[in-house]
Image (cartoon, rainbow, N blue to C red; front, side, top):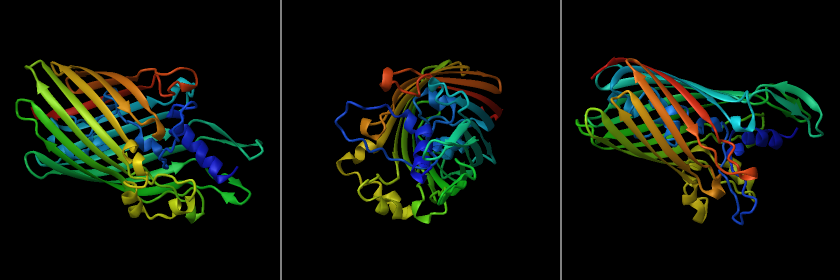
Length: 375
């Protein structure tokens, strides 16, 4: 088993499998890749039902995943959420899943702390050598734990920072001639900003900006020249809120995300791997030439609440076809009763045959517990 084979297999299982095959396309496909791509999966059912939107929407227990600067503006003093997502179930991979736990606690009216945990299991995988001979079975798994702090800078503006520990164990202690694999790890940080333009009547625009996963590369071998980038990301979001009366309100939201990871250049991979972490963030905004804007993903979503008890959601996610071609519609619903809430999301099937989106029929389930409402 060669190093490139192992890494490619891991990537295909996580993100590559979600790329629709473009066998008939004349456009060259050049997908920006990274290690630990599970950090790019929408980790909660509310955002998942809105097309993977969450940077500027109303704060909830999962603010640490989207924009923790919203936490001091939340309606509850404390909130906790648990989410379970069967992953790639349309491919009959019944043992692949993402589980997450998140929450925040407001220290007072101006500041809050957050924490979250993401655990991704790739199921049981049979490892083989280059000749196809069985080596061992192993269950690759990854997790990320982060803690954050957010503070209001004014009555309308907030800033948040977080630190994250990332662990990625894709091959255990597997060894092949000349190569020994190990568990990879990284330390990263986030910087989040939020502006609440919605007035006391519940009408207006909210804005957000995030810099996420700013951290060190990950290595799965002792070869220091082959370390992989983690998915550093720039996110911009806006949400419009409209309250019709005491029983009805609606939100429309838009998120734009851009990976701050260098675009692969197959003719000069040595230069690709040799870039420093900070320099790679800046070079990622100009190394794709005329295709640079195509590296941005766009998510739009809406959320309707009736009596603050029943929610209905819908959204759409777009990625350019030469950068991955993830395009899908989502639906979602929510139920809130006293301190307990339940959210559900569904990714609608799309495509057919070899072009069928393997993310079709993806489900997410979130249980939320809110405490000490400030209303």
